Length: 156
Ligand SMILES: *[C@@H]1O[C@H](CO)[C@@H](O)[C@H](O)[C@H]1NC(C)=O
Ligand SMILES: *[C@@H]1O[C@H](CO)[C@@H](O)[C@H](O)[C@H]1NC(C)=O
Image (cartoon, rainbow, N blue to C red):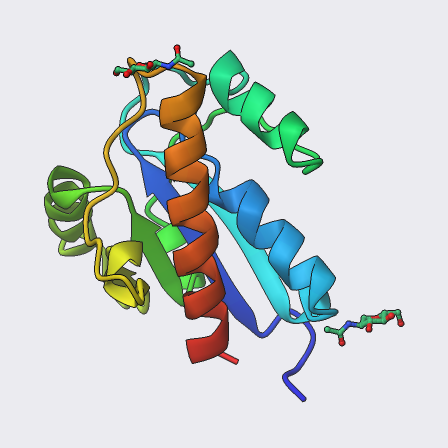
């Protein structure tokens, strides 16, 4: 058994309003009865949407799947690189930005990865649904579900 709160993951995208893997992952760890082991966070690279709720398409999608989502966008902090085990980000430009920020932080421990690297279907990149409709968000949801499951299994 893992210690309470001993594992941690931070989900990061450009503005922290579109992407809902955090909600998906919370649901998964709850269903698996391992939520006590996990500290889960999310954040944005940019400040564009700080303080805003998630995109309404994303809210629709989570509602459709019966997943509670209570979230306000925030920007990641330097401390996040020290306190989280894993930082999973949405695309290659996010990955570059995170690695650059990471290099400015001493004693970082976070492993920065594309969640797609855990995808059994090897779909490395998740399309940003920012301009998408409900069905685009559904595609992203299914992708998130797949790789969050794989990530959870790998880090058991
Ligand atoms: C989680 O706990 C509930 C209630 O104790 C139980 O019904 C369920 O089978 C458990 N799920 C798993 C995956 O262990
Ligand atoms: C969503 O947009 C795509 C094109 O990006 C289109 O093919 C699809 O029919 C649209 N779906 C809905 C439900 O509007």
